Image (cartoon, rainbow, N blue to C red; front, side, top):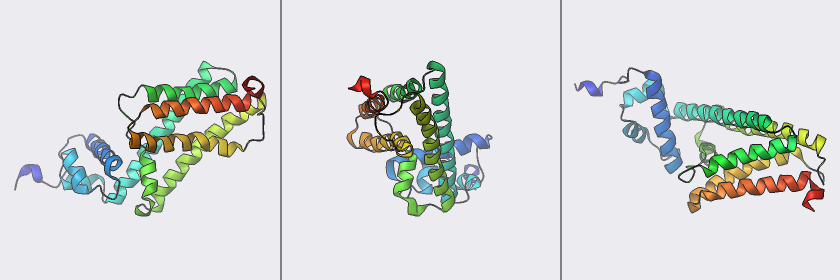
Length: 216
């Protein structure tokens, strides 16, 4: 038997192997979708055996669940970091919110290539392929964003009353929906500037809503 084909992980660093599997699987899913991404494709891209794959992920469903958890953790950490940075850069709640959106604008502008897409958007399109535990992760991520932005919007409104009645949950969802939709448009058109322009538009809308006298 070829020693390199033994059904055990070949890496002496199991965590590194696991992360490599997740990285390769995510890239394939963003290109082809979860349903079309086979275990063979993942192992081929990662340069590992099937035994190594199944050592870390007993099934493809387990892989999807692990990807969802990892993506949510990284996304929510990024959200917290940008919120904290905005709070340090400005004291006025509205300026903090505008800086927050501006930070994402800067980060999107710094990309050399069009954003590869959102894993969660891909998962939602194929939601029938995932178990409830995985879908809960996706829903929770959207609610984390809603709660964080709603809290900031309420702080803004306390200092800068909006020029018209506002549903804060819907407004909080707008940035999440805007970026998710623009990920799809960016991938469709191959134009990475779309994300930047949508962030700029979001900032303009917020300024007009919370500083109506200046907007007029």
